[in-house]
Structures are given as structure tokens and as C-alpha cells.
Image (cartoon, rainbow, N blue to C red):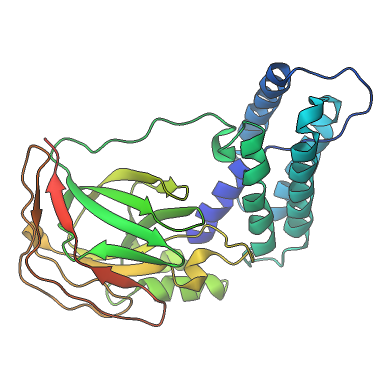
Length: 314
């Protein structure tokens, strides 16, 4: 599941590229971006059925770059265009050379690096070919669960209630971060899933039920998603690649959270849980009520917990 999620993200990122054109018949910026957007959307549709075939990713990147060689950009965009081409070519090579069953970390790092020139070209975020998706809003009555993302750890509130929640990720770091997860099998922790992923094993064997939703936030931004959480043990992860190509989760950005029934909660850790009293009772109308107990643990994967507040929306 985890490898598939990151590869799916890479599919979207990998579908934008530029190539140099000779001659003076340059497109206007509007013409260039319009034609590029159409080509990007076509490639995204083509890649929907690729799965985890890294050679197919490489083919798509190389083919797309070739397809846009006839798009001659405005002169003032050439440097950014050339930088983006370089990152995409690096990604294609890394996908091609990736050992079977292993995370193509170098490819992910190259695709992540492509975000910066893409932004200068007006087509970021690359995941949506430059088209901003409307931010998801909390559902009526959902408890707000504020999560902080940094390099490389999550900070969850002590209180994580069962039921309808809105997981809200605030990115206070310098790299892009995401959050997604699932309810774990009895005895499993987020570290177990990451270790399985690193070993090339199937982490889905440790997942009882995936959480339906995903949020991704650029540095300084906040994003979230609605979810329905049953009581149980959950793992949450960030698999965005770091500059060195290693997924953030491999650096410790994962956490085990025990969700309690009727608002009862446990400390958030990476391997052990400690039950606390019921500390969360959200109030309606957009107000918040502070939690009354705090718990904090440390772990080998640098996850952490801190006091926070939980509220419900009107």
C-alpha cells in the first residue's frame, strides 16, 4: 500500500516535462502553458493503469519530453525549462535503473526537485498539472485533529477521538509533507510497516483498514481531509522523498496513534501506547476546548506527541 501510494504520487509528478526547440518561432507564455497543460492531462490519463512498473514510468517521462520538443517556450522561460528537463531526465534514468521491488528513491528526489522550476513556469503543483484543487473543508460536526509536520516527524494532539474527524496537517518545515494512514492489525506499529517497506515486503499485510483520505501541504501551508475513525491503533505516514531521495517515513516521519472510543485517547508513540482518561469533548460552533491531560513519549523513529486542542465544526 505504501509503495503504491508514493508511486501513484510519482505518476502525477512525472507527467510534466519540457524540451528545447530551435528557431525563433516562440510561443507566447499563454500558448505555451495551454498546450503543455493539454499534453500533461493526456499523459496523466495514459498513466492511470501503469501500476508499479518503473520502466513504464521511465517510458512515460521520456516520451513526454520527446512529445513537447516542438513546444518552443518564451525566451525568458528557457532556463527554468532546461532545469526542469534535467530533473525529469534524471528521474527517468533512476526509474529505469531502480532494482525490482525497491523504492526508486533517486527518481522521487528528482521529481521533487522538478517542483521548483515548475512553479516558476506557472504549472505547479505538478501533481495536478498546475491546476489547483479546491481545499477540502471539515465536514459538519467533525472533530478537528491538528497535526504538525516538520523534518522529519509528526506532532499529534494527545486527544484523538473515534468517529468523524478532520485531520489537518500544518507544514512548519522546509520540505513538502503529506499525511495518510490506516488502522493497523493487532500488535502492529507504524515502524513495522516502514520496516516492511524498506525490506521490500508487502506492508498491506499489517493493515486492517486504510483511512480514506490524504492531504499534502507545501512549506508554510495547511491542508486536511475528512475521515471516519473506528477505535483502534492507527499508523500515519509521510512518504514524500527528501532531497537525498529517501522517503520521509524512512527518516522517522511516521507515528502510531491509538484512537479511543467516545473520545478516550492514548498517547501517540511509535511502538507503545499508554491509555489516558477521556480528555476530548469537542464543542460545536467552531470553538475549542483544551485537553486536560498530556502524555509524551519518545521513539527511535523520532516521532513525538504534544498537547493540542480538538474542536468540532458547526
